[in-house]
Image 1 (cartoon, one colour):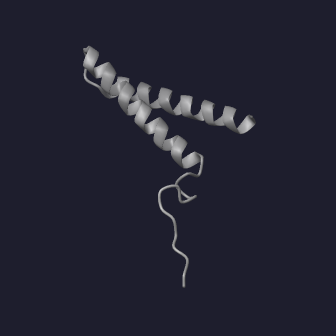
Image 2 (spheres, rainbow, N blue to C red):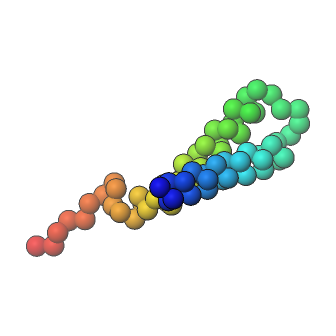
Length: 69
């Protein structure tokens, strides 16, 4: 339970940080499409962080090692 809560908090902080940075660096005035891009990039970065924090990249989620004969 604590680990899931920690993952949720970290991912929320990463999303907030990325969104804040992009809001600062995007040229003003912002259009609706700019907010869409900011949210999309924040979501992408958050999901990548979640992927690496859960260890899915190390567990062989996508590839299985073959046994040596």
